[in-house]
Image 1: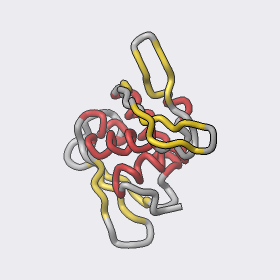
Image 2 (image 1 turned 90 degrees about the vertical axis):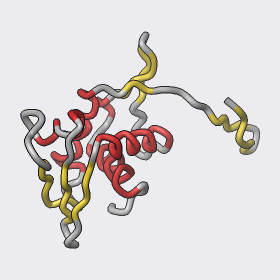
Image 3 (image 1 turned 120 degrees about the vertical axis):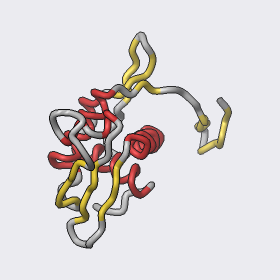
Image 4 (image 1 turned 180 degrees about the vertical axis):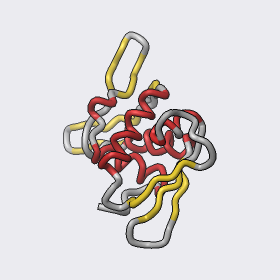
Length: 135
C-alpha cells in the first residue's frame, strides 16, 4: 500500500486486496446483464457449444462462452470467464453505479444484490471492450 497523490487536504491511497468471486456471483451478474443490463446494445446472446448449466446465464461461471450480438452493427463479441473476471476487477477499481463489495469473516466478497442492470452492463462492457462504449 502506498500513497499515490494528495488532493487538497486528502491523501489518495493505492491499495491492493483480494475479492472472492463465486460461481453464483457470476451467474447473478450475468442474469442482471442478460435480463436488462445489456439489452439496449446486445440483441441476442447465444451459448457456444452445449449448455453447461440450465440457462445461458450459467455458461460463463462453468467455463463456457457466450456470443453477444451487437444491435446496430454486424458484430459479435465472445464473453469468457477470463474476460468476465477482468471486467469485474476493473469495475471494483472503477465503480460507476454502486459499491458492490461487502466484508465478511472470509474476506471481501461481491454483494451481487448491489449489482443492478447498469452495473452489470458496465462489467460486461469492461470485460469485452476495456471501457464503456455504449450508453
